[in-house]
Amino acid sequence: MARNELVIDQNERPVGPSAYAAAEIDLREFVDLEEFPIHDMEHPRRKALVAHAREGLKAFGCAHIPKFLTDHAIEAMRGEATRLMAKALPADARINPYLTADDETLPKDHPKRIFARRTSSFINSDELEPTSLLRKIYDSDVVVHFIGDCLNVGPIYRWADPLGRNPYSVMHDGDYFPWHFDGNDFTVSMLVQESEGGGDFEYCPNIRTAEAESFDDVKAALKGDRSKVKVLKLREGDLQIFRGRYSLHRVTPTNGPVPRIIALPTYVTNPYLVNRPHHAKAFYGRAMPIHVEREMSRVDGLTD
Image (tube, rainbow, N blue to C red):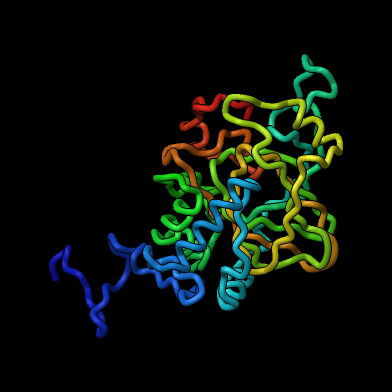
């Protein structure tokens, strides 16, 4: 057989990976295409979903689509995360919202000097199983196009960061993920297991911009001012689309023996960009050579 000859099975489908791997992903493994026809650009239900997401992002800085994942997908992803739980890198560190070191030249009440203890953990993207359903969701071109339409931004790309591109976040009894900003442009959340209590997503939509840090507003939120805080209680299977770079956010402490597990497929507008080394270490427990090699000034010039 010639080296480049394609092997065909009895159903005349290519065997093994191909240049069209993303097109070969069966969307029905994770989404009900009758309810959520994300593959059909002209379908009225898809247009309504996109409009709903855009309205949520504009009004609240967050889009929420309940029960997006099928029960099969929730079970499969929960099973994977449970099997990999021992590889979750736990955090036990004090962080500020920018994940930077303390700066003693600033006043003590500056938001860059307000730290909280983070204890949540991540199952990093490079630990996912070869047949991971989360990998398939992330690698689906249809999903990328749908998310981009919801954001009304394009093109968007899968993140080059090998640790943070599509991890699971895990929170056990008493864990807390304090107020912070994300280093990436857009985060998609898919809850696959609720904790028995707590674990609410709280955020201050668009509290800063690319041109303005709004340190006073950030400090007020850190000090307990709830005037800009919104709360979203996610349920299993829910999809959330969020602009985490400009919206301060946290997950409240969880309680009970059942861990909160959420999948975090992440997208960017710059396909070359990855986390800065201090972000990678703070979130994912380690930095890799790519984080050092690609550390560069961001266009927005924000603190983190």
